[in-house]
Amino acid sequence: MNSKRIVAFVEPSFYGVSFVRAAYEEGYKIISIVSSYDNPAKYGYEGLFDDLIIADIRDEDSLYEAITHSAYSDKLDALIPATDYASHLTAKVAERLGLKGVPYEAALKARNKDLAREAYADHAVPSAKFKKVKTYEEAALAASEIGYPVVLKPTNASSSQNVFFINSSSELEQAMTEIFDFKETYMDFKVREEYLIEEYLDGQEFSVELFLQDGNPIFSAVTEKTTSPLPYFVEIVHTLPTSVYPEREEDIIHTAVSALKAIGLINGPSHVEIKLTEQGPRIIEVNGRPGGDNISSDLLIQALGFDIFKATVHYYLDLPIDLSTHQNRAASVAYLTAEKEGIVSHIHGLEHIENNEHVIRSHISVQLGDHIIVPKSSDDRLGYVITVGNTPIEARESALAVIRNIELVYT
Image: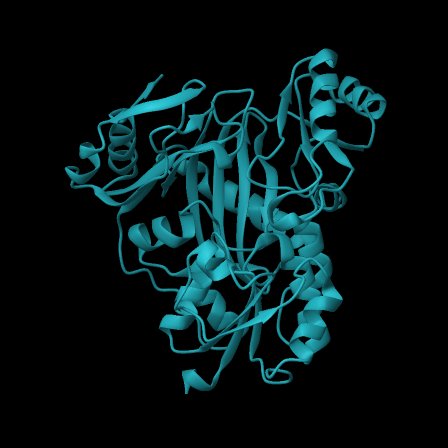
């Protein structure tokens, strides 16, 4: 029966590869809609699909016409975005094809941080003060009204790309010069020439992994985060479940759900980032998809035995969703980063990965001769280890112990 169902994914990449794997292992016919024939190899899902359709994934009409002019016109059972950047376009095309999907306006707000902030304000969701700006003069006025320190960020990028922590007008002027040069993000998607000046939120950071049904959380888990030292915001450790502020989990989840409802995401998976400030939980951003950064693909499965990708495919196909959790332990991922800029001449301590009983998976991407820098975005991280433990503290400390034992020697 499964083999007769045809599931199409738009540009599987990063977290989206887990979507393809989950659907392929269930026996569905997998169609990958891509911008290049090289992309399955580039993103690592060769052998996990049945056919390719080539389209400009940055263009709604190109996606629609590529599908309707293919052998799968009127035959798709599901059309699922497998990259964040095309989520709103996929939603619009699904509407045109009469397929189940996220409402277009909700997907658009999730992709554009200014639209999301406006929705939070309209629905009294605790968030950050913000102003949308186009010029340095507008940014300087906004920063003076909000009060330093502030955060400057693009409205439609991700992975902490060109996100700046700013203490003064001179720092703001320099950051605006840099962000003006940021024209394209992943997969050649254009960066909007509108930016956000936001209040800096101080506090412990979390993400909430959710699956909603008619606005109600039928699955939820809180992930504890550690980010790099300011002035950057690179995520370097995730631990699930959280080991800190467990008594505030209910408040954190409630705030996440209220943000999702505000932008119209009331069904399916989501990944909501939150800071627990002195004033309570405040929204950083909402993503209408499973969490990336190995959270959904590894931590949820290792800690709880819950496959949110499989659940999401079932949601799109109107099949029963298995929400049961089969494990009760903890998992953590810690990322290797550079402490300074330079050329790598030696790497010591990799044997600690193989010898650690808590490590269940690892990937070290840095190589001898690489030029490395203190990370400004997720792209600058150098590898990771994923560990499990009986408690969140055990899992996190095991991961950090391995990372701390890896020494990068510079020329």
